[in-house]
Figure 1: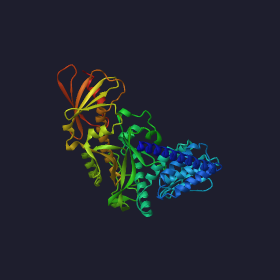
Figure 2: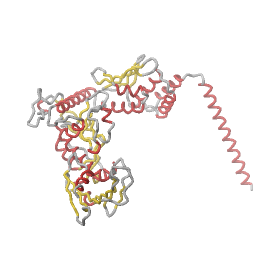
Figure 3: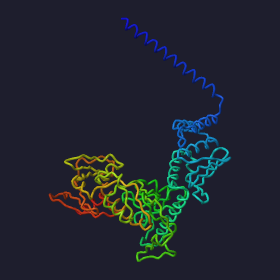
Figure 4: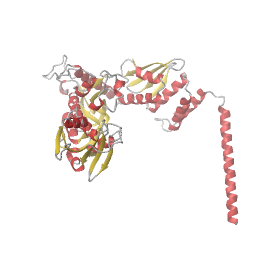
Length: 488
């Protein structure tokens, strides 16, 4: 009984202590309200910014203060000069960039470029310019639109892409050389793209799938250097004349690559001038003859060019080896995760509505067709675990010479065609209800790195049919299936 009474007294004392702490906390908050009631919002911003500058890690502001400032700025929708300056400063520091301003102009600075934002007295953005190393600033309408519409989330993404574009390794002298080399590379690719060729129709889709160096987007300072080299027949664009912004919105339907510079463990020769003679000397196929590095000014540097793939592509080991033979550069494979190609495609599929189940070491996929029909595809595991069918997800391809790009793109297009063909077996093309009975069953096997065989029951017969599919850029498995069945 005494122990029960003691527990009751202890509980009562704890409640009283908790109540006292709550009262003290409320009093403390009340004092803070009183202290800052007459302070301006500008004063509050300045206080939070000073706290950010006192962060323990000087290279990166304290995340707590960053979130606090973001909330304050989100609440204050009305534009003001100080509010806009504060937001720009915060986003610059988040990217590791410098920030300073004059009376009405803010500068977000990095080693090789800077962003110039001109503000009106009301705080609205009047103009945005981007300048790379040693060049005059040029207007950026796309970034101007983001800031005028208060789309700070997308602006932060664009700022990060710009920073990555110009984030070149080395000291200032090395960075200057690399930037020069990168500009000459892009100039040569642009000249190759502009030369007359066998393509009769120079529409966007044709240039993407068939152009020697794909479809190039002019190297505007506010966009990364990009080329587009593959689009699936299932995702054909209706518009043949698209801007960078419009084309990039089709991701991941359009396969792209950003051209950047990466660090290498060994030195490589990189161009310091154009490798195309003036005027260009063309071969029988209309391709320009390119000088070897020994014939033009070059620099030995511990870097290489990179085709940074957007999005990354599952690539067979055979194609990875071929890339190394083309470029005479060893593709880093130590960090690659190897798996059968269908496994990587399933893992990277954007759709989870395709029905899949394992059965006797084979994957079975039920796919809905646009006309509400239903097919079943079987991928025997024993056929796809062969060494020739192992693949890895590649996010970048190293190279050193403009002549490498066309050959690399041909391999990547071939791999994309294989991936498109297999993905059509794994990914439904419709969200309509499945048919109650499966129309056809198919077994899909690899025959080589360039062909796939499909075995299926012919309708209305007891016999099996085998179709061997050589993979081309135009390959689409579902359309092929309909073609086989048309005369039956």
